[in-house]
Amino acid sequence: MKRSQLLLATIALPIDYFMLVLAGLVAYQLRFQSWVREFRPVVFHLPLAEYFPLVLAAAAVCLLLFALAGLYALTNQLKLSQEIGRLFLACSAGLALIIVLFFFNPQLFSSRFIVLAAWLLSFVLTSLGRVALRLGRTNLYRRGWGVSRVLLAGSDEITAALGKLFHNSPQLGYKVVQQIAPSAISNLNEFTSNVDEVVVGDPTLTHEFTLRILEYCVTHHLGFKYAADMFEAQSHNVLIHTLAGVPLIEIKRTALDGWGRVAKRIFDLIMSVVLLAALSPLLLCLGLIIWFDSGQPVVVALERIGEAGEKFRLFKFRSMVHNAHLLKDDLRAYNERPDGPLFKMANDPRVTKFGRLLRRTSLDELPQLWNVIRGDMSLVGPRPHEPNEVASYQLRHHKLLNIKPGITGMAQISGRSNLSFEDETKLDTFYIENWSLNADLVILVKTIVVVLQHKNAV
Image (cartoon, rainbow, N blue to C red; front, top):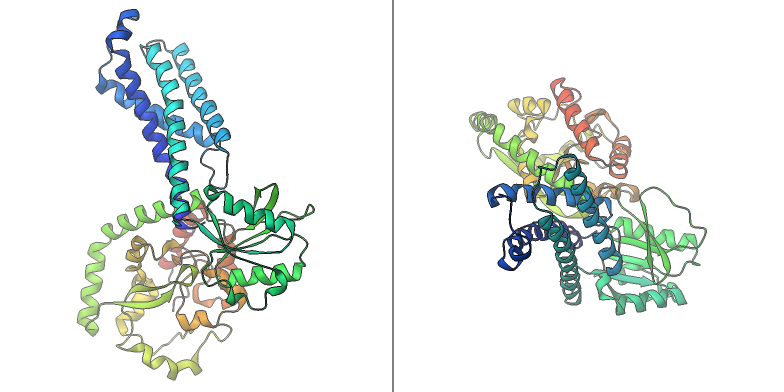
């Protein structure tokens, strides 16, 4: 899922919360209008200062009910009628919950009018908010913002139906950049320079042909969907979409998607800001020691490859002599990791005396907290590699680029530099396919233990 699409999907939550709070406030103001007081005199005392916190809490509870109703499932493409129906059920469930609270504690709240008015207004306003969001999203899609640019492969009736649907339904967020017959595909590079995903519409194409396109999409970090036949088996990290009555199977590059991606980013931001603030005295001391030990620069910015093959600058405390990269070619004969593209050398002569301590304790990695704040990296993920190392990747290794690289990861808590490159790849691939926020917490805790034990650091 593209960042623009994720933004459009997640913005529904704050809009819903605003509408729910607004409904509560409007209901409160209505209760004290003269035309309402004429037939229902006010016999209770409820200052706005006491009422407003109740509205905020009730709106938060309603959001949970909305989530249970599937209104924030990012992979759903509900019709407007289905969405409004679920809003009605969720708002009604909130009303029922308040009625139950009234039953057990009649003094909890003093106005049935406000409760009923808030229920009706919450349904109306959240429905209006969802309609406005759909209209705004469709307008953005029509202008080309946030759309998923599609290469549609196939020449049968199903492919034609999908192409017609994508053209006539801009609210779906797909734009067919090009449609090609499978027989015309000789080199995919000719067709994919400006697309985000490939959709194979013909379910009768050979598995070998579909697999070749899938491998190309994995290598070039493109989305991939294909029309399934009736006997298609479900597998890990697979989503099923139904468009124009055709089941489309999407093979997700990682389990880290949707709300999981949002939660991980929020967790990364909070933790990295807290750690950077708490460790700032230590960072200052380390910087001064490096400066006195071997001069400037104290921090180096190294070119690395991140998510989707994007280059970024990774920050580290300098642990090597100046211009160490120029000496690397002279030392390749001493590489202790010949099984893969990485260069590792236990007694690397380029490392300074204080740099050895930094590496053994992993303190040289601390400036990467700034990379996390910038959004280049995550706290947990595969370690980023140099451009020339990534250039030597085999096909299966490209999966490591499906998520943001991390300061630590599965490989770092499972053997660090003693692991072969293939073992490291397998561990990181397992993490990518089975991500969870709980796994991130476990890896972070284990990282602290491993670092304190000074195990296998190079």
